[in-house]
Image 1 (cartoon, one colour):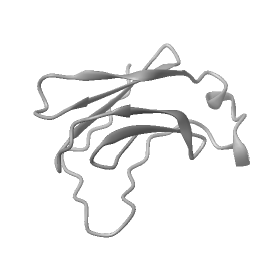
Image 2 (cartoon, one colour):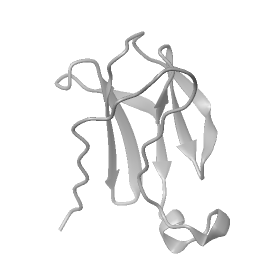
Image 3 (tube, one colour):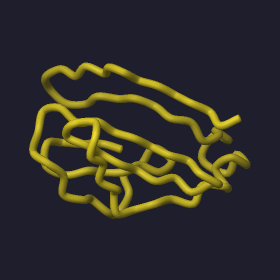
Image 4 (cartoon, helix red, strand yellow):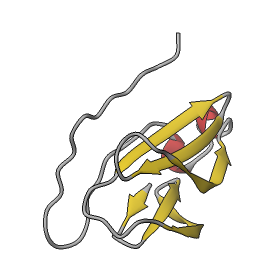
Length: 97
């Protein structure tokens, strides 16, 4: 997921998806990515309590079978781009048992 201060963008295989959803114009945003039964759902929140679901969900079972570029499997990543600075805090990755 990406946020440029005005809209959310999801990425697939490292490339931006076709759908950009309006998002709050804010400097601080919580992001949540949930992979449940190979369906990835994206959420964002301004306060870390009230969550809004992004309009696009992704079926990703093929990614886990190494079908994308360079035979890379599905995994989360953090990035910042452009001028200025970014700070990532409270990053957690929890795998289901």
